[in-house]
Length: 183
Image 1: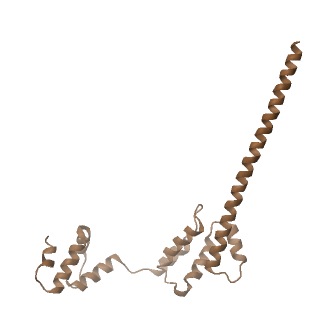
Image 2: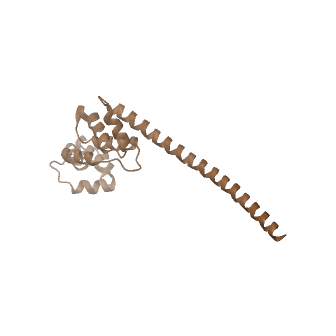
Image 3: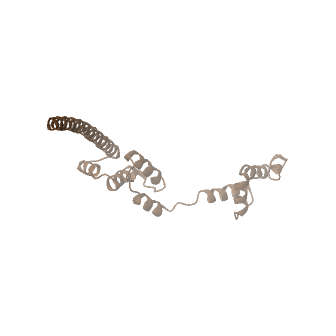
């Protein structure tokens, strides 16, 4: 109420705007606001101080370092990896080179050697084409694994069935021998 009161009273407009701003910050925002050193005590000065606090200057060199260090995790899909790179690249200020930097990072830091080889074979590789190749390669690898698992399962079943048949014949022969030896 102490903050909202001046905003509702008949005071000059700039004082009401500042009081309303502070009221809308909530308890945590008001705590932060009171700790800020303000050049001026007006609305514009308050907004500028809050913007500086909540949106500090970006260190482009550090942001680019973090971008370049980001490698694809072992179980991470290309789409998830590139989405993470897109978040990191926002602070890098690459400008018109952004897609090329994303493409290069994908080629260098992918976790899959087959994808990297396929990307390096392409002439005039664009980011869109790199993503298409990576997705197709990931899908092909997943399909090949599924087929291999299915084939192994089928082989296991047929081996188990043939072993069961062999064991059954062995048991029958064994019983026959035992019966004939007993007579």
